[in-house]
Structure formats: C-alpha cells, structure tokens
Length: 304
Image 1: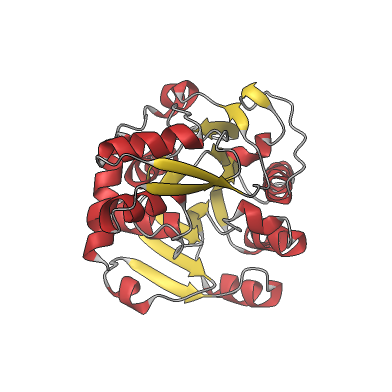
Image 2: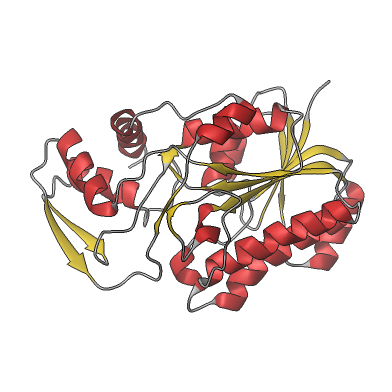
C-alpha cells in the first residue's frame, strides 16, 4: 500500500530535504506559504499547494478537496527563535495556530509533530520528556503549546495517533543563510576568513545533525507503528558554539580568531540523549561533523 503523506512547511529547509530523500513511492501533498517552482520541478510524486495555514477559511476549503492521509508530518512553524522575541504574536500564529488549523480540518490518521528541544528553555544539564518544563522564550512557549494541542486533539478523537518529536536541530542544504553551519562553511572555505564572529559568549550548547540523518530518522518514525509518545531526537553530541567553531576551523585548516559580539535571546545549557530514539525507532545519526560540513560545502559551491 502506498503511503499518503500530508507535509506542511514542505518548502522550508527540512521540508525540501524530506521531499528529496523520502521513499520515492510515497505520495506527498506539500503545503507552504511560498512557492519554489525551480525546486518543485525536480520533485516527483508530490503535489504542491501555496497556502497560508493561519487562514482557517482557506485551509478548510482546501481540506475538503483533499483525500484522507495516513500521516501528516507537520513542519510548518517559525524557525527563528530570535525573531519570536520582538514578534511573539506572529510566532504564536506561525507555530501554534497552523497546527490547530491542520488538525481541525484535514483528515489525518497519524500526526507527527516536529516540536523543538527549545521547549526545555531554562533547564540546565540533562533533559528528557519527563523533565519539568517552564519555558519563557516565546519560540519555546509556542512549540510547547502546540504539543499540548496535539495531546488535546488525540484525547478528543480528532486524530487517532501522534508522535511529538522534540528536535534538537539539523544543518545542510537549503538551510537559511543566517544559520551558523552555512556561515562557517562560507567564511572558512569560500571566503577563507580566519576571524569568526559569534553573537553572545559562545557558551550555548548545540546538538545538530546533518539533514540527511534527520530525514532518515523521520522516515523511521513514519514507518513505525509506535505512537502516542513524546521523544527527543538529537545527535547526542553537544559542544558549545565556541567549540563548534574551533572544530570547523580545524576541519578546514583555518587558524581561527573568535570574536564575540552582542547578546542572544536564549542561553541553552541543557542537552539530551539519542538512546531512547534509537531504542524505539532503531536509528541514530551517523554522519560526522566533518562529512556533513564537506557535503554542505559541495552544495554551496554548486549553487553559488
């Protein structure tokens, strides 16, 4: 039986990579607020709809025209934590309202919601889904609120099954240029700079995997019968930003001078484990930082 997937945020960073690397026979309907005709032309077995998922009337109209879906992979959200601070209402609409509109209108058997490790905002040290959370950052609040709505929709019978994935991040092709991994590759390999500017003190912990690993993990979750659970999805490495910059510089043979500027809206001092995800879904991220950065370098050079 061919899997029918509803993909929200399908033309964002993770969405594009999911479309490129998911099993080709899966039939995907992709929803996004933007279009990318050049990218859409290279994707087979997918239909694309341009729609603002905060517009409940248009969402309802489209949902009535579409069939039921085996799985909804919900990626649509604000992807920039810093932007949530000056724009908390926009962040709430982009992250939480989009999820509500999708769940209330589309016919979905199983919802996979890509939440964020940011929901642990304010905690220190090791965290897991049993950790008490009390986020203050708007980006974290909206993701946690969306998680609670997922549980509500399951309890009320609107969706049959769910998996909430607290995702700690990825890097790779199609990520926004502001992301640190793209900046590292561009500045160290294309521009050959030996100074790198970090916002804040560089003590934030970061645990991102290469995007192909992230997609492979999501495919495992989609294929698995396991449901009605919340799980952390991370690589299991958690250097701070200063360490990451030094590692990247070493990979590309750069003697780097790090400069710190300004402040950041969040200070992440928490980390998670990949063991539970591996135990439940039989997957762990395998691509090393060096391999991932070199893959990203090749992509950036081919798309200059």
